[in-house]
Length: 271
Image (cartoon, rainbow, N blue to C red; front, side, top):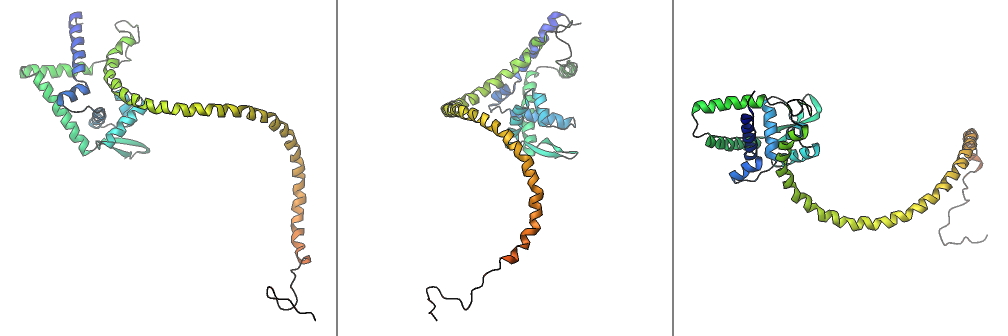
């Protein structure tokens, strides 16, 4: 069991590494923008490397965001031309995600930049130290328990809220980046308030009228119900008259006038 000093050192190193490896930190050092679609590329690439299907749900789970947020990120990646939607050959109801040629090129650029940063950090290390670090770090990550591995309060585990702190802190930059977008929508929402408020008196004014019609409508129910047997009783009588009506047609022959037809406006002389 490592001593507390070693664990403290590992914790500080991991927190510092996580901050330095944040997407926006990488982009800032590269002098580029930091689109969240980089994260979508990473998720889809990981699924492709593992020969697993990638979907919007895959992105939501990997990035720990809700489904609508994941859908927006995927839509942005598709619009950028980095991701394409393809039909699942085994399930026509499902759509899979795949990187385009442009997306794979961007992924390689991201990898190259990350590796250059790692290489700079380990520049003074020996080959043996770099190999040992790669082996130990890979083993460390592979043995990290999932967040739900220990219930809150179990021996040797931190409270669930404390376990989520690094994850919540890591999401702060992303949430902050959404603030301008949310703020930009405020004037639009505020502009709709007077229109909605103006409709309130009209809607309220209709309530007494609608309520007043309820007793009248209820009172008509027995009357309408009482007419049902009467209407049903007339059905055989109406059906019996159907053959009789065509039989009366010869009694009303079409009147044909005698002699040639007169032109309009011409008076026939008296005989």
